[in-house]
Length: 180
Image 1 (cartoon, rainbow, N blue to C red):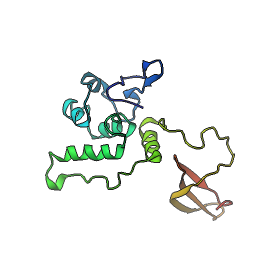
Image 2 (cartoon, rainbow, N blue to C red):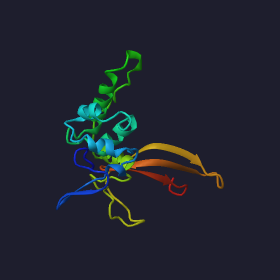
Image 3 (spheres, helix red, strand yellow):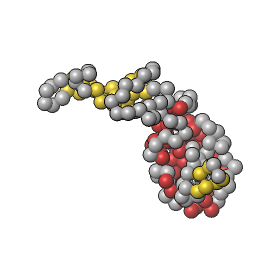
Image 4 (cartoon, rainbow, N blue to C red):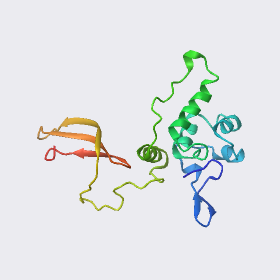
């Protein structure tokens, strides 16, 4: 994963077994020079104080947190997000304060969703179905969320769009009329 203290603009070899993820490859992170020039950082607060706000705006900070660039401070990225919000709230009036995340429970699914959003794919954990062939049935416990029911235009039959979640990942899915 990216590390705000070790990562450079592009992917960089740290040692024979470790490659640091390039900061410019994180979605939403543009001015990597300002981030790299001020490194190393003790923690998130240190980064907020030392990186120019133009290069470390809310969008950039959230992308770095969600991608894992501050995991050295706390591997729970939701708790880090709350820390970031709390630090920003220190300089705001009561009516301007942003609400903290209510649920800071953090698991593999959260990690993989954050990495997919910021890095384009999950890199910390492999999805349970990695290596499965198309059409191959998968086993295990799954839950469904975000179920949106639809009626097809041509045959007027029911179908659904949903998210299937197993122990390590969430994937969007379609449930066609025959299976519905």
